[in-house]
Image 1 (cartoon, one colour):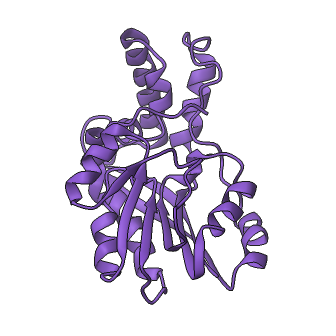
Image 2 (cartoon, helix red, strand yellow; image 1 turned 60 degrees about the horizontal axis):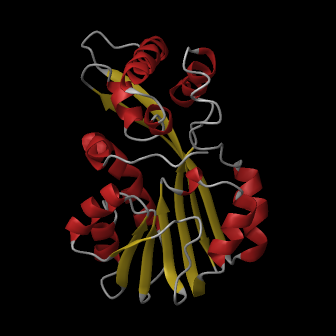
Image 3 (cartoon, helix red, strand yellow; image 1 turned 30 degrees about the vertical axis):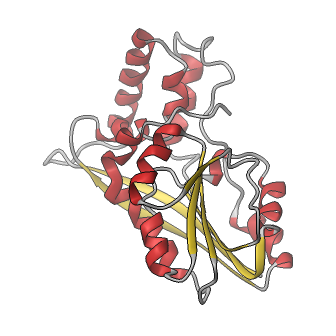
Length: 255
């Protein structure tokens, strides 16, 4: 998997829709307080002020590798550290380790999640949200078009985020290591408007590794082919609106 070159402006085109799972996850965190809260893969920083409000007595910080995302996140006035979330480790144990729509980009969750639990202070909580969209047309058509189009040689080895594990697998991985575990799926129905709205959505996230590997001409061709596939998979309604079902998986695990 190639790390995408993030574009904060494109990502924030659907900032309201992307904020909903952040709010849903934060409201379910039962930790009474604590001194240290870290947003791992904080992106544009949209969760940082919400975390600061939820844990007013804590030191809240973010971690992200993308300079563009990091610059946007720092506008929230909260400390953001530039680091690779795959290798990051805290200097001190963390009370709440939060991650929204970031960990699905990393491989080998069987090793990753126990490692993250090891960063928690006694009684600490790991709070995670990840898209569960690998088999949906939004994601599956990206791989198909990459394999079958005239750009297939240039996109050899380029993929979006790998599939996440099943709920059963995360339970088996985490339950023996924690005191409390809560797992759930939520499918959001995003109401999208505008020309090729689904393409615009994907261009801020899962489509980026493919687009970044192509020159301008091939990029336009790839986007056009993907647009055709998205209009078929998610046809506009009579008023031009597109409804995009988007399934997300949530994990709360507390020591």
